[in-house]
Structures are given as C-alpha cells and as structure tokens.
Amino acid sequence: MDVVARPEPRAGEGELLLRIKRVGLCGTDYHIFGGRHPYLAYPRVIGHELAGEVVCAPTDSTFRTGQLVAINPYLACGDCVACRKGKPNACVNVRVLGVHVDGGMCELLAVAESAALDATDLSLDQAAMVEFLSVGAHAVARANLNTGARVLVVGAGPIGVAVALFAGLDGALVTLVDRRRRRLDYARDRLGFDDVIEAGAELPNVLANRTQGEMFDAVFDATGVIAAMTESLSYVSHGGVLVLVGVAQGNLAFPGPEFHKRETTLLSSRNALAQDFERVIAAIKANQIPTDALRTHSFPAEEAVTRIPELIAGADGVLKAIAHF
Image 1: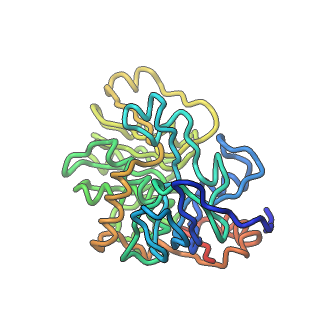
Image 2: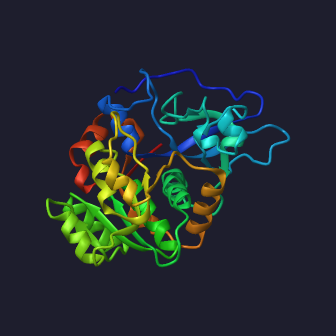
Image 3: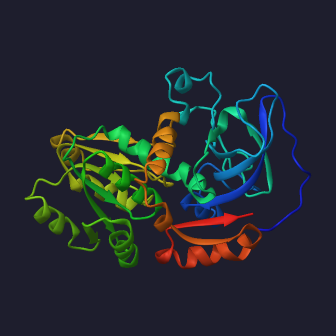
C-alpha cells in the first residue's frame, strides 16, 4: 500500500464530482490488503463505504453543490439477466468501487449520479456507514423473518452486527456468536445485544440448550470463513433458513442427510438494493441505529498505509474504522 498522486478526475456526462470526506473500512478492504479477495486484480484504489460532498453536478441534476451524499458502490450494467430481474446487486457485469474498479480512498471521485444517495441530515460518519449497514439489511430482507423468530448471527464484525441490528428491528430474537470475547462484550455493553455467546467446542450443545433442542429459525453466517460457514448448518432448525452473508475462497460442502432432513433453505446474500439503502438511511434518521458506538476508530486517510496493518493486527478491538479527509 502506498499514497500516490494522480490527476484530478473530471465528471463525465451524467456524473457527479465528489469531494470525499469519509471512507469506512471493512473486511473486504482487509482481505484486499491481505491478498485474499476472490474478485480483485491489483493495483487497486480501495474504498467503497463513502461519504462526500458534491463539487459539481449536471445542470439538470437533482443534486446541488455542497450536498452531502452517500454512495451505492455497486455499479450495475442494467442489461444482464440479473438486472432484468431487478437484482442489480448480483449484476453479471457488476463493477464495485474499490474492488473491480478504483474506489474512493481519494480526495476527489467522479461517479454516476445514479450511484449517489441523498444523505442530508446525516453526519459524515453516518453517511459513510450506510453501505455496510445496507449489506446487513439486505441479508435480513432475504430471510423474510417473522416477528419472534429465533435468529443466530455467527460473526460479530461490522456485517454481523448490521445483520443483528436489522433482524432486531424486524422483531426477531437475536443471539450473537463470535470467537472473540472482546467483540461480544462490546456488542453487549455498547450496542445493546443481550444474548451473546463465545464460540468454542461446546457451542452446538450450548445453542441446543438455549433453544430446547430446536435450534434457530434463521442462521446468518457473517464470518467469511469456510469452516464456520459449513458448521452453521447444524444450528438451523428443521424448516429453517441459512443465509451466507460472508464470502470466502474455496468450496462449501454440507452433509446431505442433515441438509435434507431439515428441508433447509440455503441463501446467499450479496451487496444490497436501493430499498435497503433507503431503509438504512431512514433507520439512522429515526435514531434506531447506534452509529456513535459503531465507529471505534478514526484516522486521517493519508495515514492508511500504517493504520490499516495496525487495524488488522488489533482486529478484536475494531468494529468500524473510518478514514477522513
């Protein structure tokens, strides 16, 4: 990783020129730094959790100079089979800022006007959190939860926490599991999750005892770890749903009889849709999301070269880090 100088971008037709103010960091960025992301080619400017101010806009734009915006970083083609089905989040030709194309860890960025989201009345940090929270909201929407459903979220990182927050807003009874005690303590003490369990060898027995042997109506895996994703099947109730939110390199294999006897519904959840972004912005404005507690680290963006390795090394104490310009 390095800091480099590049020519200032110019907005093309139908584009906004933004001055980036905040860039959230997540597991995707850490995987990119570690060389473990399955969809990426180097070199790449990272940054897909973005908040910025409009520098200039087309004359007929609904956006105005100085307006605060968040960004939907999933640039869809609009023509493929997924887009025609109303699923641009799974676009065959999707270009995700900071993954497939250069992202927003920079002072100025030109983006399609259609990618900008009005973030008026949000703080800069809140606007930078909209994307990762939308990933969680989308995963919850995929599961179609009933009020009172037992929900298990495996992984208490940013995406897992986002899933847990929106599952709770949908009326589910949420249990949060992680191997890192420090993260669980933070989720309990600062984010309001009462039922947190440290993962270990006895986890299946603990979960069975908590649910009178019935296990969970919906299990969300947000670890991005193949072994954990595979194990999550054993936590699903008969007739339940398993939602894989994290992505990892490698092949998944489930025991056929266990999968079949539950009549398990297996879902993946990728990115987010416009309605997910809208829901998140509305939830933040309604003070339903503890955004102040979600941000655990902040630093000047030009220090990313040294700070990102430090964040990875101290991951147990990091929930959401935000770089600022």
